[in-house]
Image 1 (tube, helix red, strand yellow):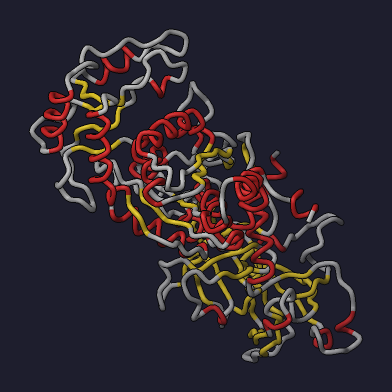
Image 2 (tube, one colour):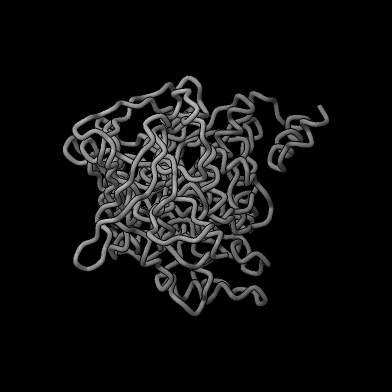
Length: 558
């Protein structure tokens, strides 16, 4: 029991303490509350894993609630994408809720606050209101409309609700304390007028509640026990509690807000505004571009649900923000795919290899293991013939002693096949190597049990048979930004740090077993990295995205 307690994070300690003092286990209820104004990103994934993970740990319901209070930026497309991403990660929500479900109740409570003298309609401009808020070191000044009569406030609120006033003409503010040391308590805005179409309520509502008014009351309506949010909402907790105080019924459970630190990922941005800019300016192909840190982008890149969940678990939850190197995320997907991904052979930069003493027109089907990490994965047959493709970088006409791949008068093994020896090269008129000629040892076939097959050579190369190889478009994705923290430079635009080599598109050749590979199937291209079939693939054209190389190439640059 002691070991289990020591392994708890501080969020779990809060829950455990509440279970000892104020809550029953049946009281527990969590929620994940995204705003449907963009696609979920890797930061949201941590929050998803936290809240749904707590639900699984405590056998408690977790609601998916869309904070849809800004019709100017929210769309059904984003709602659908968010649900799709959460389901793909493997989580199931108890109730699908929307803040817009509570618009009438929130409005009724707002009327109640006006009648109690705790809210008023302010007719100043937003600029004037901001100026009168004061500064952290100086108190604010009261609005000239702060003492409007209850009757006038109710009449104006009704006109706002009915769309009888223009956008920006009035707002509803809570009447709290203009001298509070917490500036969020200085008469915060509860409602603003927006004549916009809402993706669920249409044009029924002309006023929309602000986040601070909506969030805690929605938690209360749903009887959420613990409302976990990121650290920037710590100053909002006082207001969260004040709003709850106005509607709280002692017979009901009172939600508790607590905060955890955001984990930022290097070489990317997660601001929805900045991600939208990348999409709008055509830097990426869309929200699900494989270079994007969105869950949809990571999925298309070939990341697995387990790799993302393992990443979230490994960084944990804390009280201080920090920058997590993207190589840690890449490590997690390598670890996961190493166990799961079938091994295949593909050549990205081909040069022809001719085995001059191999019979012309003959094809052998050699046995190749699908995944040495998984005994149940079985094996497949790979065609071998006189003419093969190998990687151009795997041959050097003149090489030093540290080069363990193919060169003239040197032996290497072809993976799952034979030992070969470089003999000569054929070049074009410009001196480029077009063919490498070699000989093979017929007795050296892998797994044949002959003495020659057990002979040790230092290099092993992957290959594909020219006659059987399938051409494939391969998209070599890399980090989108050259800087670890591209948006941390106050004097420079984050767009200045776009990596011009974040995408390279090439034609490669892959073994024929991949002919029927389906979208989102992952493979290890042996010696090269992990690749996934893109949704752009068709029966006539294979398209692969590189998930990650086998090794972290950026580590050399650090």
